[in-house]
Image (cartoon, rainbow, N blue to C red; front, side):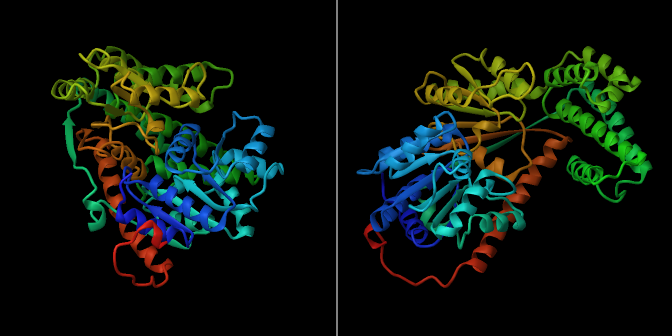
Length: 508
């Protein structure tokens, strides 16, 4: 490992104060964590817990720490390990990597306590909100007043959310570095960004208009019921917010006819809005698969009233007929094939990562890319909850990533499971099949390239669709996030002592 001044400085601060570390992907958050672990164990003894949201991430950190830290026992706990064996792992090891759900459950059942733990590291710390297991573990750790290190590439742009993360983890300081900071810039690889705009074919535009007309019908139902603010943009986010309000009223005992009608109209609007999203940004295969699932749901004994109302409407039947007649696929598909083919022609040893938001699209893109000369394609998807659909268990996800690293595959098509923290080898090209409105996910996707060598990111945008809105939304949220973090750091941080000269690990 090369010594980087900014990592030493960040580790020095985090070794003395509970810190939220915000550092772009690929700049060595795990290295900083290892420095802090080494310092804490050397100075205080005891144990260190290193928590990460998924088993693949836990295994990755376990491997990294084994390579970085000498003379200490390092164990690993996941839900697949027997509870009695977990007790032994926790007792016998100095450092334990684990999923937070396991630790939270074992704390609750009295199988372990945190009295000997001197440091807990929360990877992907932006998850420490609401009822997530990080919150429960951090709360149990409060009575021991131990050190905390939260790590993330992107905590989010909303001040309230960042404050909630800091409060839940008992954070006292925020340390932020970007690739533009002078002490970081010299280590940053160049990432070239390209945007590819595509036009929807005329027959898909016509289909989009038909679906939009049905969507407007259900929005009008809500407006006529007087349950939504007409001056607000009636987008999916607002509809979901209102649904939560109405469901709360229902649970509180309100059983009015208008409330039931509002809940039903909202459900219909959201379902049709999803179809609109698919036709505009994904393609006909994804749309047809979704329309089939809607019909199956409507025909099922446990299907929702909203699905039955949609499917039984004349407009839906016309949409179904129209969708069956569209021969074109989304123009993104052939363009993605072209981008991947060109990359492999120019650099046959390339590793390529293609992100898709939906699993149906992931399946289709993987099939199409399998026809590109020189492409050895694999899929990385999460565990499926959907009936009749087979996902990848976390153990299988680890296997796919290992084979990608070893070069058995050179193209990986991934859903959101590939975004968070996973070390997916030295990736030369990252493709966004669509922009994502979340600044956290956008930063994480981009961070999969430009780690050890120059990389390239290509983002596909369908003109005059929500793709454009999502792209600008994530861009604005990123800018807002950087401003808010600097402001909050100023609010949290005490006056740091001014020290001169180059620091080394010995200066902690």
